[in-house]
Length: 171
Image (cartoon, rainbow, N blue to C red; front, side, top):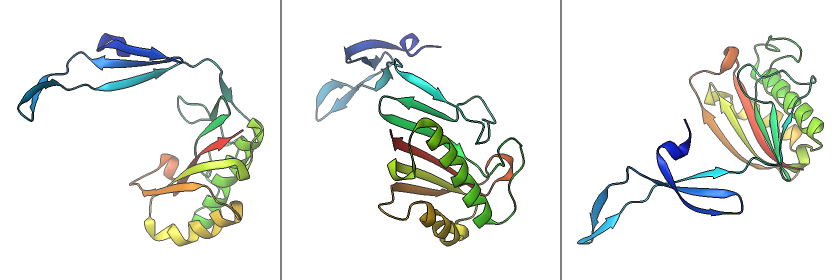
């Protein structure tokens, strides 16, 4: 169902439309009646290009390995699957982190980017106790001027992986 089914267009500029939530209710603020506005965006997808390579595992769901848009690359989370299989590389966190980063590197390469052009990563771990070991491997791939990063502990990851890494990179 489209966003316009719930909201009405409010403003459009440069291919981005802001929508006003049609269900917004009046609320009292400092003794005055005001209208609470809830905005969402719908960006144009012109120039959006799917990136796919056989040198990294195929998607295990309805998503792309990466999307190029303008001069930016959005890489989906990479788990430590051996390319061409549905098998994890091994049990150790160091080995899994290295494979996840190799998969990420293959996608960056296929898109014409590299580790030095990564702007931000998000690392998901099933055990925050592995943080130091992951950092050690991660540091070998991002040895100078590392990107911004977030790291979260999660209950489980797809296929029983211990680590998943996604990235946003410049092209």
